[in-house]
Amino acid sequence: MDRLSRRALLAASAALAWTAAGGRARAGARDEVGQRLAPWRPGSLDIHHIATGRGDSTLVIGPDGSSLMIDAGASGGAAPPALPPRPSDARRPGEWIARYALRRLRETGGAGIDVFLATHQHPDHVGDVGDATPLAPGGGYRLTGVSDVDHLVPIGRLVDRGYPDYAAPSRLEAAFQQNYEAFVQARIAAGRPVERFRPGALNQLRRRGAGTHPQFQIRNLAVNGEVWTGEGEDVRPLFPPLADLSPADIPEENLWSAALRLSYGDFDYFAAGDLTSTTFEGALPWRDVEGAAAEAAGPVEVAVSPHHGMFDATGARAVRALQPKAWIISSWHALHPGPSTLNRLFNGRLQPVEPRVFATGLDPATEAASPWLTHRLASRQGHVVVRVAEDGASFTIVVTDNGDESDRVLAVFGPYAAN
Figure 1 (cartoon, rainbow, N blue to C red):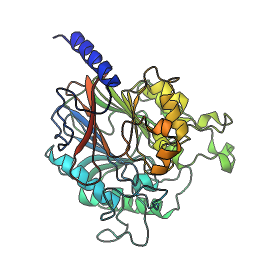
Figure 2: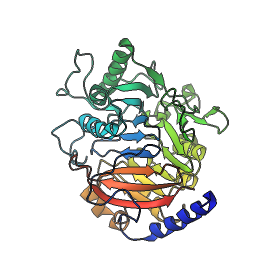
Figure 3: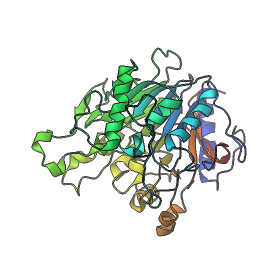
C-alpha cells in the first residue's frame, strides 16, 4: 500500500474512532485495558503526562530512545483545594516522578534523563520547600521536585528560562526559588551542564550528537517575552520595555514560561508551561504570550492546555491556532480546569471537530459545579500517555492508573491520523 493510500485509510479509521463511544482498545492497539502499559518500542515516540496531584511533569521518550523531562512539580498546597497526592503521601512528588521515569527508562536501556527543561520557577513545576523538606546529601539545597528527580535519576543537561542570573523581571526571593537556584549552583560547581532556553532554537532539547530520526525535532517557540518568527531561529519581542511599565503591569513569572513544539513526521505537539492569555479586557494585548506562541506553532495533533486549563489560559486565539485533536490538562487543584476553558474547547465555535480532552485529575467540587462540561472529559484521573507510531503518521492516547505503580491501562483512544 502506498503512503497516500495508507494515510487515507488512517484518516478514515481515525474519523470512526473519534465518534465511537468510550475508551475501548481498537483492533491492532498494542495496549489493552486492564493490562500493564506496553513498553516503548524503538522508532516510536512516547509522551507521558505524569499525574501526582502536585503539579506538572512530562516525560518524553524519543524514537531514538533519548529522554526529555519537562518540569517536575511538587506543590505544597493542602488538599482541598489541591488534590490529594497520588499515588499517596508516602513519598514526595519528585520521588514518585523519578520512579515513574525509571520504569520507562529501563525500556530504553537508559538510567538517566538526557535533558530536563524547567519551564519556569513555580513550585508546581520545580518543587516547593518547607521545614520538613530534606537536605540533599552534602547540603546546600533541599530535595524537592526537580532536585528529587536528579537525586534518583541523574539529569544530563538542565535547561531553564532564567540561567545564569535569573534577573528578569527581578531577582526571585521566595524560598522555593532560592532552593532551585541553589540546586543549579550545586550542579555548576560539580561541572554538570546548565543552559538557558533559547527562543527560536531547533533541537536544543534533543540529546546532543543524536543523528538518527531526523523527523524528530523540537522547536523552542517562546520564552522571556520573545517568540519565534517562523524564520530560521529569529525571534521578535512581545513585552514593551519593562522600564516603561507600571509596577502592576510587570509580567509575572508565568508569562516568562518556555513554550515548545515537538514534531515527529506528521505528528506535532504543543506545550507552553504556564503561559496565559489574559490581556485585562484588551488593555494590555501584549500579555497574550500564549496566543503568540500558539500561532508560532501552528496546527498540532495534541496540545497541553497552558496553566492547567485555568480561566486565564487556553484562550480563543490559541485554540484557533492549534486546532488539536486532543487537549491534555495537567490538573491538580479545584480551579483546574476552569469552566470558561472547557466551554471554549467544547462549544464548537473555535474548532471544527470537537477534541478529546483529558484531565489528569478532577476535584469532585469542580466536577459538580459544571457537569454539562466535565462529563465530556475523556479522562478525569490518571497518567495520560501519547504514543506516536514509528512512522509518525498516527497516534493513540492511553490513560493509566495513578493510584499505584502498576501502570495498569484504564482506557485506550485511537489510533488517530496525524495530518
